Amino acid sequence: MDEYSRVASLRLDHADPLAHFRDRFHFADADTLYLDGNSLGRMPARTPEFLAEVLTAGWGAGLVRSWTEWIDWGRRLGDLLAEHVLGARSGEVVLADSTSVNLYKLAAAALDAVPQRRTIVFDPADFPTNRYVLQGLASDRGLRTRPVHSDPVHGVDPAALAEVLDTDVALVVLSLVSYGSGALLDQAAVQEAADRYGALVLWDLSHAAGAVPVRLRASGSQLAVGCTYKYLNGGPGAPAFLYVREDLQTSLRQPIWGWFGQRDQFLMGSDYQPVDGIERFLVGTPPVLSLAALRPAVELFAEAGVDALRDKGIRLTELVIALADEWLAEFGVTVASPRDPARRGGHVSLHSPVAWQLCQALMQHGIICDYRDPGRLRIAPVPLYTRFTDVWDALSDLRSILADREYERFPSELSRVT
Ligand SMILES: *Cc1c(COP(=O)(O)O)cnc(C)c1O
Image 1 (spheres, rainbow, N blue to C red):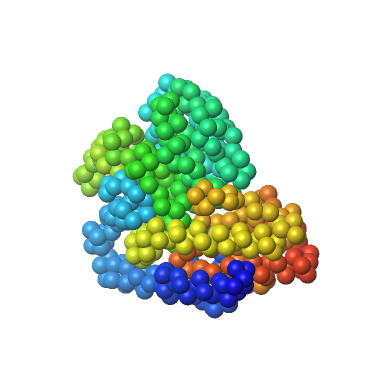
Image 2: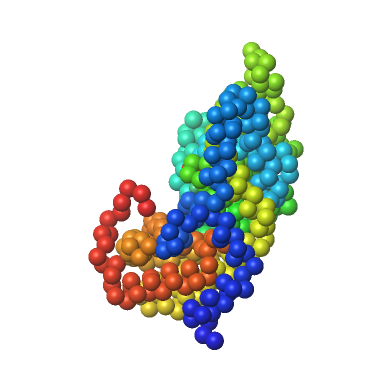
């Protein structure tokens, strides 16, 4: 049988042991083909019902009394994520704030822990907010930022990192999976390189959590942050997570001294005395409704298992690449993600000078993916709810959009949100 035929993809769907998880998600219409779960994950079917319960029983009936239950949701969800998604231990992960804010808190805590070191190593191709947060910290404290060489497709190599490390480096900040190319770094090798110089590593797991099995403990990782609205399906603006390895927690102090990090919070003590545990990295009142929305989503990961999801994820992205090579290369479309599945996260980036126009044309076909400068179309076939035939249908439409030059009807200027 022709491996590029739709029948071949249908067979893969029939043999897919995770296929039934698709029914656990909300589909407003059968026609929209969604390949943008790395930007905003789909809504689990149970989320509206669960939220309604929290609203009516929790807020509506329980009123302020419900805080006895809500107060540790950030911690309890953190434990679930630690166990089922992040490869960490109970008490090492908590949900709070946004990824940008958590990155600021943990980076500041790390820098303050080694004031004699004056350099922050960063990836110039990292997600912009990470670069801005680090620029701000460096500017406040008179520190240097030092870029590491980052390949546009393969990201940061541990050997390239070793070249920019020395004993002046306080902190290295890297994304485990690159938002641009989808490159997946070698977490243990990076950590090992940094350990040789006594530099701390702060991982951004925004594009990794829920897409690849993250092994924070096994890789010796010290610090991490990440968001929950992408692969983790927590909903728009869902609170982010932060991880601090247990043995480091008491020696790190975050810069925002809020009452949710305070020992005996409700004694309203006069001076700040942070708790010993992971909660010392909290600041203020958590967004309870957004935390609630995360609960049904995390349960799906516990049920499906990240290793099984990864296995399907690899096969889905392999199909994207095979079809792109077979159908799209003749139109100047190239694969801008690592071809080695062990070095690739959950999405594939396709490069084309007209990628933004292609993205708009696909949208017209009911196929949602996204565009990232420069010239990259990101395709994320999320294993919990994407079928092999979805990949086939999307790439097949993309082929005809290119062959018929349909994309020329769309503007090449970028819009406010891409
Ligand atoms: C999506 C993403 C963020 C998002 O940060 P917010 O504070 O939630 O806006 C941060 N870092 C990386 C690497 C991301 O991919």
